[in-house]
Length: 168
Image 1: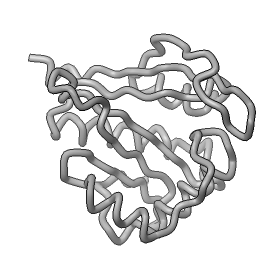
Image 2: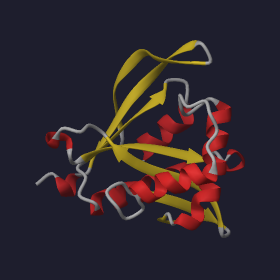
Image 3: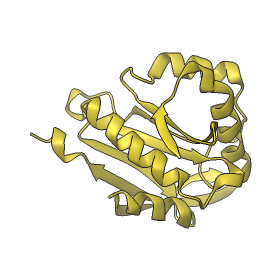
Image 4: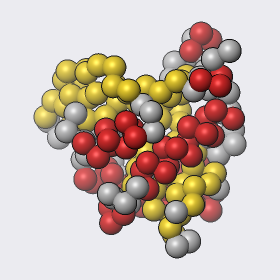
């Protein structure tokens, strides 16, 4: 597997993978599928080498996973913290692509000057929790009834990872 910065040419693959995550209801509170045009607009506004890195993982020349960063909070004191997301193609889950995407994202975030990455994971999403733990994220708490998905309250685990090189 190869991890690399995402490019606009990856918008179709990213859209497909993200829409699988939306449909599967295991990794996001989002409910409406995205279009390639929406992903291209998001991409142009955020990355891959802009303020919010985006990486993809390829296997055999096909994009099988992606990870992205976004703004955490608008206050200046939080300028070195980014939220992150990671998604893996349905047929590729359990093969290490999520872990590879996270490792690549950590490196891209380090180069972009971030000192911390944070996210929230559905408590029952063991695969994401294990992938995060494998690359040094720690679980710091649980938000109970954080949001409703399809009318059902969902709890999320908060994860964070410091990027030591940028803490000086």
